[in-house]
Amino acid sequence: MALDALLRIDEEGAYANLVVPPMLGRTTLSGRDRAFVTELVYGTVRMRRACDWLVDRFASRPLDVRTRNLLRMGAYQLHFLGTPVYAVASTSVELGGRARRLVEAVLRRVAASDPEWPDDATRLSYPDWIVNRLIDDLGRAEAIAALAVMNQAPTVHERPDGYVQDLASQWTATYVGARVGEKVADLCAGPGGKATAMAEGGAYVAAGDIRPTRAAMVRDNAWRLRVQGVGTFVADARRPPLRTADRVLLDAPCSGLGVLRRRPDARWRITPDAVDDLAVLQKELLAAAADLVRPGGRLVYSVCTLTAAETTEIDDWLTRTRLDLVADAPPGDPWQKLGRGARLLPQTAGTDGMYVLGLRRSA
Image: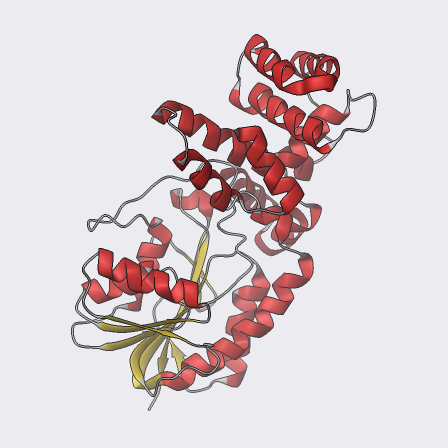
């Protein structure tokens, strides 16, 4: 089952988080086996570059897609899970078909070798550009630590209402500071975690998303959680169908380089150009969001990424172009002050990487 999922991801461009749950839903596997399938798929996708390097040292010929993914999965079990050699070899040979002898020979050599990684990008299994960009923006020590933490499975955090949401996102919703009776606009709201959290405190939240499916997720989550104060709409947040709000949250589309542990295949999909393209979109969204805030009201900008282009450089742009926006105090520990805002690195508190900037609109 894990191999079938890997082939769909590799050959069809499918997303791991959209492939695995439906496959598991059609089986009668035990909870332990379901967890094992999930770990095999997510882990192999995440550590693909490292697994390829482990395998390619011993592959004597070009590999077809099925054999490549079978060897990746075997290398992941041997090197990163510590699965016994006999178990990995036995199952992999059984699945290997005509390539079974090659599969067994390569995996036994992988198990017997002590890798001397050529560089950090290979060892940590990221594209070169991500490693280089984060080193430039964070400094080497912080970047390598963040990348290492994002290779670990995420911790599951459940709110008191039962909604599963990372602490960084929960803290971001709290930082907005929505109060009873206030009107709050959440402009990029899907799937609705922050919107429902703010509404549970007594605010009325107009939660929008450009994609109807994601707006529907906000609606459905509010209904499931029995949260009354959420209204949903479908719109481009650069042209929101709203007049004014006491508080506006712009949890903007971003490169997602702070949540790579949660999205195992995202590191292979995002391109270097996307970061700068998204920074342009973020500025357009912020201009519209700022115009919604009533005088004296509050705007919070947040992104789940770590690049300077989408964090401090956005703040620098606001400083130059929106003199009516005055910085609020950033959140405290475990957040780290960064310019006028604050950053949460994955290694700081075992959460997603996040950046927030709070601003007040002057009269």
